[in-house]
Image (cartoon, rainbow, N blue to C red; front, top):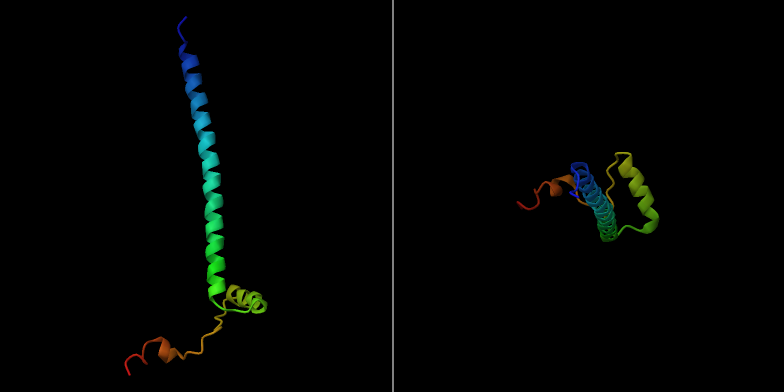
Length: 87
């Protein structure tokens, strides 16, 4: 007995659902890896700033509030614009 047209279509639907499920799982895995990589980058950046751990929450609050903290930067604005380089 030949396979009916509807049975073939149902088989294709089943295959498509299986592929979709695999792709969704792969997407979740990639999203998790991406988040972990971002977190590692953030940790590396923060550690590279040489900010004491007890001052970090204050710095983050200032950044969130729109303030411009100057931790570790004792440079005048003229030096930041390159005027010292011309001397």
